[in-house]
Amino acid sequence: MNEPTIGTDTKPMSEMELGKRLGQLKAFGLVAGRCSAEQAAALKRIRDEHAYQCITTTWDEFCIRELRMSRRHANRIIGWFEEFGQAYFELAQLMAVSPEEYRRLEPVVVDHRLQFNGQSIALIPEKAEEVASAVAEMRKRATAARPRVSRRARMATLKRQCEKILAECADLRGGSSLEEQFELHAILQHAITRLNDIDSFLP
Image (tube, rainbow, N blue to C red; front, side):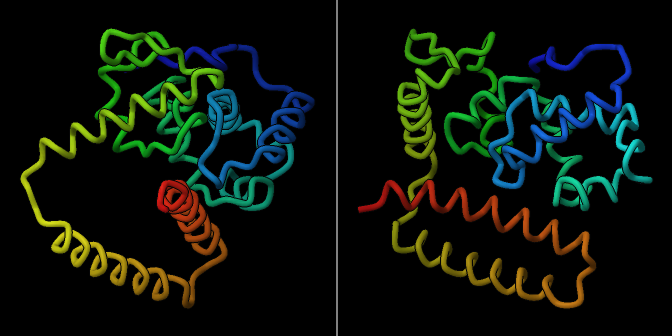
């Protein structure tokens, strides 16, 4: 596991710094799933040091009122930072990658670089195309290694899964609390982002 190194300052966050960090978090928006490692680290510090108490009473209220996301989603981002460190967010800034997929890729992510076919590709914007190409090839190889199932059968399964997910979303929308509405919104926005990424590769 990559050790988080960003945001390890032991000095308590001041009210002025909280305002600065909050501005950064709001400016870039975290709901779309493109959070940077610096933003995730700032979010963790605000929660762990209870810095949010400068402007709200609870972490729950801070997330909903100031970040426009649920406490659960904010904690999820922090959890990814604690589990993966900076590298996950560096990769996610370059391309859409879920935590589940990153767990499979993590063994080839070393010192903020992607190791593939004897190459060591830095996780920086200038190398985004190379990173995406390498990950696409890894995905292709992983797919080829799976048991063969006809495309028609996979499409039928996908359709059933989509219908089930849509029905679940519709059911969750009814009678939900404000926090749950924000959480559902975050989930849907993340799904839309991933689907748009997939759709961009279609003819």
